[in-house]
Picture: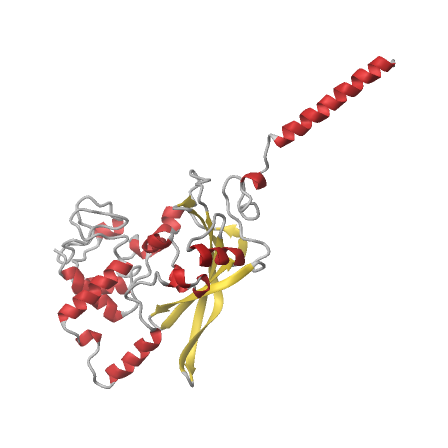
Length: 330
């Protein structure tokens, strides 16, 4: 092989190496494109549970959801420490923020301090990933600025949510003004979050004390003047119901308009696409039937969609107030 041939071969190999390097630079990896997502979100938008949880996560707050016998389950929420810091400074979540919620079944017993409840068995896990760019518009589990996922408690590698609209949306619609997150329940997010608490928020401790006063014969909310109960029902409706139901005639949302609902047959508001269960129910809405439905949204009319999305109103006095208010909406 001559010197000139060797020289030409060297030039060719150098050009190939340069071309290969350029080719690599022009094909960015998913990490370069979506660095906040690379550890738990695949290039096509599938969300996985972080294998190192709870490393890097901080507990930010919890919910105790009541049932007929006290606290039904406890929701404990975690965020990455950097995301919580960002929220405290800016009053919003950064792109790529991750929130993880564990739902635990509770048990309770009487103690010297009163009835007490504790978490026993994990029911499910939920995960949200903040997305300010709309990266996955065609993926069914991305919407309203977040990626949404739910995981099997026995196998956190198995994602079980069907799609955002069916599995997640209804529960988060009431928190639309705070980026679909009930931020006021998480003290670790700071004062900006707690300022978003609804006006109807009340102390659980005060409610217990009120119960003692009622037992002593003092008038309680159920004995309050009807005008006061209607006003309380209106406030409760606005914070718990109005994101799915309007009170304008014919204006339907996730749920049907409740204008003129008292006296109307279930599943009969014109223009709304009811479930078969609701259309076939032989129920006439009255204050009594509204209260029963709010007490057991799954069981009062089995198979209806609302029962799959909304757990109901556990407080009987609040149910009564909402029903009293709806009777006036006509």
